[in-house]
Image 1 (tube, helix red, strand yellow):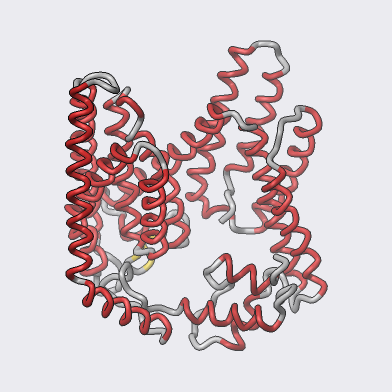
Image 2: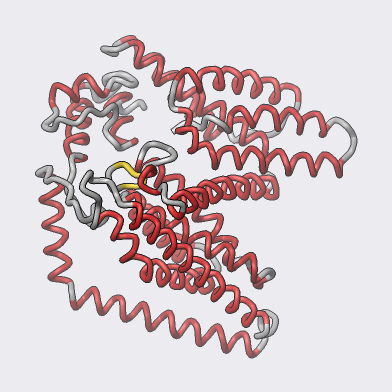
Length: 439
């Protein structure tokens, strides 16, 4: 999805930053830069309320303005931009434009190539604004997380005030973005900065740590309401990488266990939203209000508990002290015991898990209908058919693809479903089908 708000905010703030940088007032420049980056990040986070600016009439003028501003800034106020990423984006733009020569729909190819140009321009502006400076990057990230969390809290308020069903498409959380998986993606993007706040080193601010953890519970709980399987998969894979590769595993693991506990306590109330819909198929006002109330209570409770743990941890003494080392060893032992219990649980239930995976795989490849109870652990749906058609298109033109934005024509020829879609719900397969191996 393309941001509708952020590209408008970025030119204004970046122009202000350039002017301050030349004014000779470093203190004022630093403050203006921080405010500008926070504003840009917040605009990116809240852009979901305007449907991600998906309409061409909105993002086309933004792209032109972003391009002009990027060129002006790179010439007038040069900073290092990571060309290793920018050049491939420009390559995708140029190859998409070239693909119009063999596309069935030239207009679709031009539209897709213009989108790539917008992505390249937006990336160039953001890269220029932080320019390898860690503080600027963190400021931008904090603004984005704040924007996403602000929208999440607005969603909770809507649900608590009796307007919850308006946010759902059937029984899946869909608005304000207007696309279920895109909404889940926004929520997922907000989780990681909040988790980083919850595990700040040396517990310098217990209140901030507790607030960060409570925010993660809220964002993850709303993510569950989307019933997006990609949300669950992305969350699990990212957590595995964070726990396996990034230092600070002990604190992070403790935070994740507390978050998981809060979500487990909330799950039955969240699941009631889709398990007990109204006669129209939409969730009831009562179920959405109750889910929001339980989720908010669980988040506040988990945040308060985490803050208390942070306060206690500060009393263990500085890093390297005897008391702190003893506490760390005890915590490591507890985590090791939990990990062993999880491995044993998987081993004991290996047969049932294998049967479950086999059953859901069959449902996936045979296009079984999605269950009405929950999609989170189901393989049903039509996505396999989208992917199958994308593979057919790739095999028909493996080098250059069928042309940017030209997935739909062949889909309507080869589909085995009645769904009207514009892309195969897989960025990798869409790129292979439309732009071939070159793309």
